[in-house]
Image (cartoon, rainbow, N blue to C red):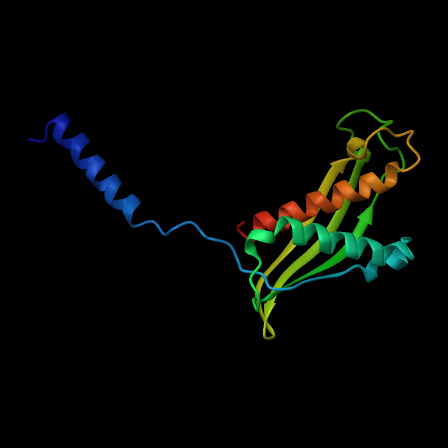
Length: 160
């Protein structure tokens, strides 16, 4: 006859054995270079700002992914597919679906022509994330907030 104590001890032993067999948590994908392509933003109305957005995204990714950087490692390629700012920066109701700024990108880690990782990344932030709507440079802060958020998601997906 199995007693309650024997059952609990047996269950604990089985659980501990199961935990020991779990794989170690991923350490993240090592990254060598970082390249950002924002050319798709030009036809969307960003014009000459597209190269600046690409440079800013590269810098933000380099800052956030510093722990994963490894000389000679595979290259992270990010294609910015879209960047949309709502027309009403912080003037609508909080949480209103039409009050979100959005950024879509595709992050790929490629090593010698082989894709090691690929992920679509979509960021949504309230348009008020860039600060007060009446500031003359509020759109720059909104774009910066989207770049930071998108880079954070890429970092998370890479396991950092």
